[in-house]
Length: 257
Image (cartoon, rainbow, N blue to C red; front, side):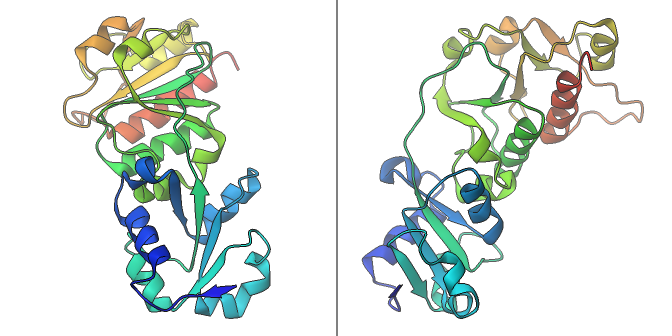
C-alpha cells in the first residue's frame, strides 16, 4: 500500500485528467473506473486493474478486500480522492485499467450503431440495454460521446465489460455489416410491433440510433432494410433515444421466442 497526500503527486495529476477529461483515455491508454459497483463488475468479467486507488476511510474498513489485486495500491485522503472525481457523488474506490482501441469489426454479429449521440447518460444506458438483450458489438460513429468516459461508464453500470466497443467508425464501416440494418424513425416506415407480429424482425440484426436532435444520418437511413416507427398511442412527438433503444432491442431479442 502506497499512501499519497499531495495534489501535486504525478499519479494524482494523471488520475485527475483521466477522471475529468472525457477523451483522455485515448491518449493515455488507460481508463479511470470509479465506484464499488463498476470495479466489482470489471473483476467479475476477469478484468485486472493496473492500479487500485482507495480513500483512507475505505482502506480502514476494507483494505484486505482490495489489497492483492495489483502491486500498485494507493491510498488517498478522502478529500483528495473527491477532488479527483468527475462525478457529482464521488466514490471511495477506483481502478485504473489498461485500454487500447478495438478496430476489428465483426460483420456477422448482432450490433448496435450509435450515430453521433451526444448525451453520456443516453450512451451508457444504451450500452446497458445492448448487453442485457444480447447485443455484443457496439459501433460509435465519429461524433458520439466517448464510450469510455467516466460518465458513460457510470451510466453503463458495468455493461462495457461484456461488449466489443469500436469508436470513430464511418458509414462505410457500417456498410460492411452482414446482418439486416434497422433504423428508427418518428414519421415513416412500418411499426415495430407490426414487424414483430409478421415475423420480419430478426434477433440477429444491427440497430442504428441517431443524434438526439437530428436523428439518424441520411447515409445510414439509406442503408436500412427498414426504417421503424414505435407506436405512441399517448400522442407524444418522440421518445428519448435510450428509451427507444430499449424497446427496439428487447423486441428483436425476443423475436421468434
